[in-house]
Amino acid sequence: MKFGTIKRKGMLEEKKEQERTRIAKNTMAKNMELTLGIVTTAAKKTGISAESHRLWMRDDSEYRNKIKAIKMMKQDFVESKLMEKVEEGDISAVIFASKTVNRDRGYADKVELSGTVNVNQFSNLSDEELDAKIAKLKLLSDQEA
Image (tube, helix red, strand yellow):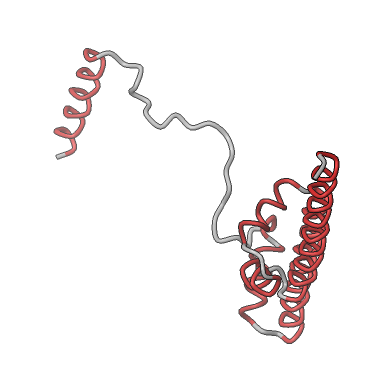
């Protein structure tokens, strides 16, 4: 067997593998859509590992964009179901939607602050300065008692 024949066989095998990968990626994307983006279930239906999916997400921008579009579709689906419940007057849905959609109007569970806070106002003081502050606080405490 000649070297050129071996090389052609290797190239043919590589092309077959690339075609299998292309088909698997397309099948995975379809299964991601069917499962609303649940990776483990879609991977199992496709016959690949979830790790293969993660590698494709990292390395293949076209595949990554398809999956991102499916994720947006899932978000839209969930949002539409939430809004259906809001329209029905489901109080839990109304509260949840208010906490997320109307966060900027004060409906959030937590308040977000930005800025700089000096947690330890005494960190730059010397031992002598700290002793003086402690003595002053003790004096104030004794006067209140």
